[in-house]
Length: 341
Image (cartoon, rainbow, N blue to C red; front, side, top):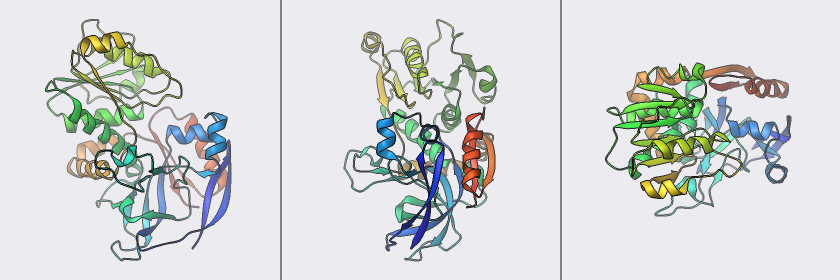
């Protein structure tokens, strides 16, 4: 099968490349429908990754968040037209201990492996899950990011002690909003406090029990468990504040990605017996749990639909470039493109 792949070849430059695809009985051919942009995609688009990384990764199709429509299933398990969420993590092995998203042999779409900006995407059949009826497609486009929040909170469940009185979320961006929304499902009896840098963004967290600007946190405030969702240079301050305000023996889940190393006050981490646990990406089990939560909770779906920001149909390479440029100035929410190339 010949396929048209829209690859980033240099900063802000896309080319259409024809690729010969082999479709086996273990594959499903999907037509992408709605795709959502991640900060990682923008770092490639703007060329802000180190040049050594760009030389290694490009040319490459971007986007690892999306939903599509089944075009062909050789086994007939999925009917043509079935709407599915796409799982970007693609394992090529298993381990009894290491989860699929941490296996070094796994490949990840739009990170050295072509993402979903293609005319058709050939997916391993265990990398697609049928969407329930009635889902908003623009919200469904970033189920991958929702599954990342699910993975982080699942790891918190596994690592934390019995104190779930107060859950603190550091970060007022997209990941912070998604994770805070999910906290209400994972820990419904817990008090949720969100810490951020922008009051205008914190105002969106109306479902939280309390919000604080990071430069105005009461000195005596204590939290039971914490999740860091800031990333970048903000990670260092967030981790420092978590270490300061978390109760002894608490657990902090680190989810924000930083290009540069950040300092950690290990003296107080040790003195308070704090557990720091890093999480990255997600796997099929996290997608399944995310879909279960979304199906059972209309309130959660409604809150996450509020995260839809910039939306636009794209049909040409110039449309794609304009969409990415528009997302760079998008103040709030996820940018979702209707893929119509």
